[in-house]
Image 1: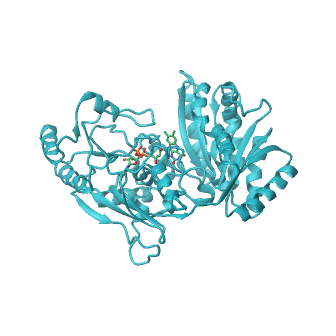
Image 2 (image 1 turned 135 degrees about the horizontal axis):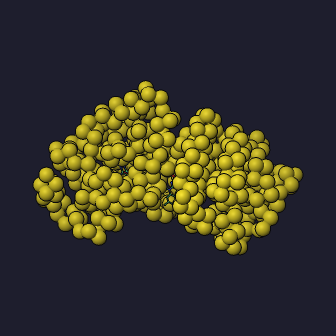
Image 3 (image 1 turned 45 degrees about the vertical axis):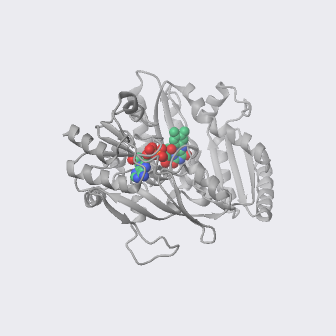
Length: 452
Ligand SMILES: Cc1cc2nc3c(=O)[nH]c(=O)nc-3n(C[C@H](O)[C@H](O)[C@H](O)COP(=O)(O)OP(=O)(O)OC[C@H]3O[C@@H](n4cnc5c(N)ncnc54)[C@H](O)[C@@H]3O)c2cc1C
């Protein structure tokens, strides 16, 4: 059957069907540790070609694994059980842009950083900023519901998608709702596709909302000898009526890795760092920055701050260099982006530390703690797998007890399905399965991803 499918695909997409071993290898992994060799890789150039592929795949019940840049951390773009990878990187055009309306219409393969730079030329701002924005795609960001440091003030990808064009199995094309800024006519299908991880349809274009580019930014780098105390400072700033654009936390275990790699910004006495940024109209930002400076003085922590673009970049570098530095903590890793209501940040952190102490295992808790989103990485060595898995399960149970969720921005993919099942009631799970069956009755889209 596969031979026939490949022959028909070659007719549909001449020269755009990859079957050589090196190409298959290149599409067999993402940023998770999972691997799966695809049967073939398709590189369509247009949405019409994608719709033809969806028609054919449905006819042969052939699994289709949609892929953007393949930076998923959960295996969601890996053909774990085989199947054909549908790469959308060539659908990378900006289709329309209206400066007054502040809306851009683009294809899914547009790189997020390119879109940001394009609208900035018009003094407009597309805020979602996953750390991978230099190489991840808009389609991938929508399909995973991607977020980033600026989520605290500006929200995440979900807050900027007005409507989507989606290709469904069988080659049907739908628009998920009107592209207008206001709408109350339709059942709003747009949110259903945000975070759907390629399981419901293939996003073929997106209308995205833009906002004015902030005039000014001020970044504080705060150092503390007590990590819980630093978490408390974020709440204090929020109580002052200030919403920082970012509140990025670097916890004591992550700092240990930076110290071991001799990071020039990190001092021996630091137990935690907070990167706190405010932005907006120049006059307001100055007032907010003054208020934060005063509060930090009273709080009794040391800090530095800057509004100079290149100085801010070098302060942010400490956060960006974190992920590669962490490898020093252990040769194996279990990775989660656990999210809780912000009020429980301190309680969760102390619970996490109680599992780390004396265990011989390192547990990080860095990230976007302004929105309660902790990047919890458990680092361990060969032989400690069971201990690490037990710790992971216990932390996830705690998150659920605190009414949190197993993923704030990376999605479920394959790696978190077991834990996602703990979050869902039987009815909620059945409803998810029914929705999947409604859009993809033959189950050809990303089989095995997301749904426990
Ligand atoms: C160094 C690094 C830093 C990261 N930082 C962040 C971060 O700060 N915040 C964050 O949220 N994530 C982060 N990620 C995770 C990842 O970058 C995001 O999940 C991103 O949104 C994936 O985009 P992608 O184009 O690589 O999609 P892929 O990895 O190719 O695909 C991801 C999922 O989306 C589906 N998909 C892709 N395109 C489409 C489409 N057009 N239609 C339907 N489904 C589609 C795929 O099937 C898959 O399920 C990071 C990853 C790395 C490697």
